[in-house]
Amino acid sequence: MVFKLAIVKKPKAWILTIGNELLIGRIVNTNASWLARRLTFLGFSVERIIVTPDEPAEVAEEIRRALSRDDVKVIITTGGLGPTYDDRTLEAVARAINRPLRLNDQALQWVRQKYESGGMQMTKEREKMAYLPEGAEPIRNPVGTAPGSLVAAGEALIASLPGVPAEMQAMFEELMPRLKQLAPPLEVIDCGFIVVGAPESSLAPYVEEAERKNPGCYVKSHPKGHEIRGPVLEIRVLASARTRDEARELALRALEVVKGGARSLGGEITEEGCQE
Amino acid sequence: MVFKLAIVKKPKAWILTIGNELLIGRIVNTNASWLARRLTFLGFSVERIIVTPDEPAEVAEEIRRALSRDDVKVIITTGGLGPTYDDRTLEAVARAINRPLRLNDQALQWVRQKYESGGMQMTKEREKMAYLPEGAEPIRNPVGTAPGSLVAAGEALIASLPGVPAEMQAMFEELMPRLKQLAPPLEVIDCGFIVVGAPESSLAPYVEEAERKNPGCYVKSHPKGHEIRGPVLEIRVLASARTRDEARELALRALEVVKGGARSLGGEITEEGCQE
Image (cartoon, rainbow over all chains, first blue to last red; front, side, top):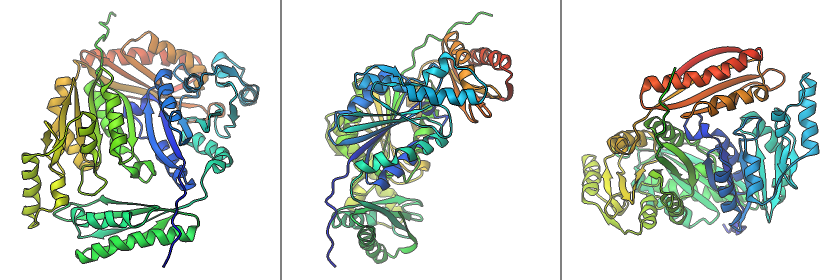
């Protein structure tokens, strides 16, 4: 069978999750994995996930690094949009792209409406949430209070979302039309199975062969048992192609290489399946 | 009451978690939060958590950045130590510190013993796990197969641990004596409570005041409810001082400032407690 290989280059994405609560290990970074999954299935290649302190200089440094790479088309930040003194992400974004913060009329209107609907007045802390980098577009927050910010910098988009997961996820949906414009014409699928009874070191040459022979695939073995006393491996293939059927065929073809190796080593294959 | 303030400077730590499975969002980075928590309670200030692809050039770039900062004393990497073609972390460490990889006798002996105890011969893929950066000390892996690596670079230690959580955690314990030598003479405590009924934006000035008036404390509010329709906040204080009692007093003093504010706003305080 002949395949047209996916030679489409994936645009890169960086995810910056901001907050000392992540750096002190109080919180597991589920925002990063959620965003990484969504961006991956949109066809982006996530090149970094970075957790920084709530320090504008540190955040700005990472944004500048991302922007300095030509192929980074999306930078998503989470956290640091709220009303407290350490919520300074948009200050960092503004600094990274050499723009001032400006009170955004639309954002201010949204924030004011939210508080007024609860019979609450505006304060300095509440108004703070409506300051965006000059030229940024506010992103509506359908769940909470702080608006997000979307700003273009060269060929990249910088989207800043809150750190509260329900707000972040809802606002990511608002971003989807913009992200789809930047996404490549690729369908992505993630398939795999479990092998019981074959050590990872014995299967390694087959994993390498599966990836080498199938461009557009990323093949990986994840040890779940004990290499020597009771090997259990999860084999995963992430395949990208122009159509869903091609992506699935590509993934299954790569998996077949590993399966052949696993069977020749006496491994038993279970739990086959795909996610797309 | 008079306190001696904690003016001890915390050494910084960077955590590099390596693996495409994190960047495609298949796996939530629990290794990073586990390590961050342990390092924080040892008295380190974790300055970055970075997820990189399985690309030695990318990993080496991040290690070099960490080393370029004087105050970074610990760099911990996880992942990329196994037998597969994409397990190339130690190649990256070696490259970052301009040393070659060398077959380490002790590491080779450990790996060989493990496989021979299971009646398995050495192969190229198995031997690969015993190559460490020149001058590195191997770290025994009491759970799995791949040894870790500990190497000094200037004033910093670079410790490389596997990505399998049980192996990583067990090997971190083997590192503890070395980390304690680098850790400052500080006790760290994390205390907090829940406030129901006070919006974050109203409590914000008290949170700021609590941190400003209590050096050695890091104070943060985490929204759990809805700012306007039903505010629920978790308030956390991370306090560091020379003794455990001082740290606890410091934390409680900072929390008292926020509590006063919360009560004046009609908030109800529940679930008080500390973790150390």
